[in-house]
Length: 413
View 1 (spheres, rainbow, N blue to C red):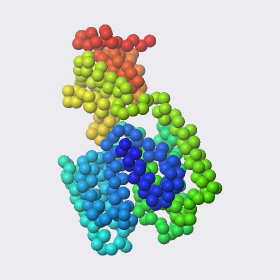
View 2 (view 1 turned 180 degrees about the vertical axis):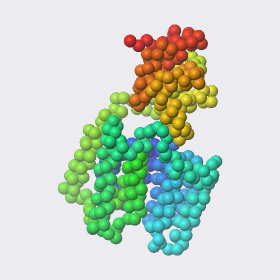
View 3 (view 1 turned 60 degrees about the vertical axis):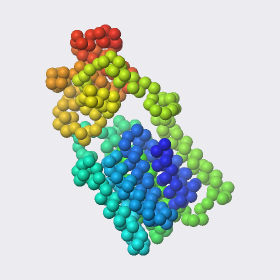
View 4 (view 1 turned 135 degrees about the vertical axis):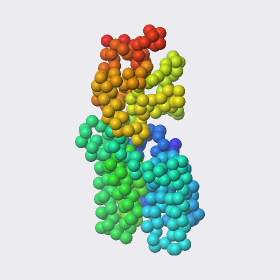
């Protein structure tokens, strides 16, 4: 619901900057990029706050709302700084619009300037004060563990093992953006938007550097492309003639069919049950541990750490989780990865932590993860007691676990 609301805000601005037909066609092209990040994560709130900031600033600039709305922005920023790390784009957006509205009356610019000052100051209202403000500039560093969503388009294409059509779509949209700005400069130089140009550059670069930014890149590309295309075609472009309507239908259908063919394998047509809440059996593996009173220490892989924290913290601690910034580089490079690659390192970790269970997402396709699972299945000291579409659970063969292993052990041929 939040995603649909966020999309509506950007679509509304795109429609106002052009017309429904242009906004609709551009939307069909961009929806796969916008849908890149469908996981339920805190960043959805950054998309929401960015959309609200953008709508308020755009509406104020176009004199659709009064200057009083600008003082809603600091209130939103208080929530944003305590929810997700992209809060820095709040003051950045206000500052960008302040630069563009330099021709406005002094009274109007004063309101925007005060809004910028307040929006910047309220970022200090967080548990970590200045440290939190600096964190966005430090968090995207070398963790000692590669995160796919933080990799660049160039790196993933060179790697050749990530099947993501959005890598090519990003390049197509980026190329269209560049061409649209060039066309506007040639045909309607006075209509060239400095704000849209900066936003296009910023989010294109961030999208290129990390595919996690594809969604916000796609959202901003929607009004920017709609605005540029409208100015290239001119005000006279309307779908009144039969030929224009036929062209609109043809282009829309073509984009839809191409997208459907390219992305059909990714669509959850038969894989999942549509509905609200968690998928059926989502908590089954955690319930299995609880029902059988299985205790740790637990060795787990990166992908499943958050799941275990949700179900078992603080009773059980995880070995790692998918917040790489919370761990040191030596942890990943000298302990976590080597323990899955080298049996001697694994034995050292067993002696150190005395693991009683292994809780592992077998959809971990890292070379070390797959190697580790093969070695543990062959390891006589461990028994597989649970397996589903996502999780495999091993239990240490000892007197405490004997009754559970006798009842649930899965024998592999």
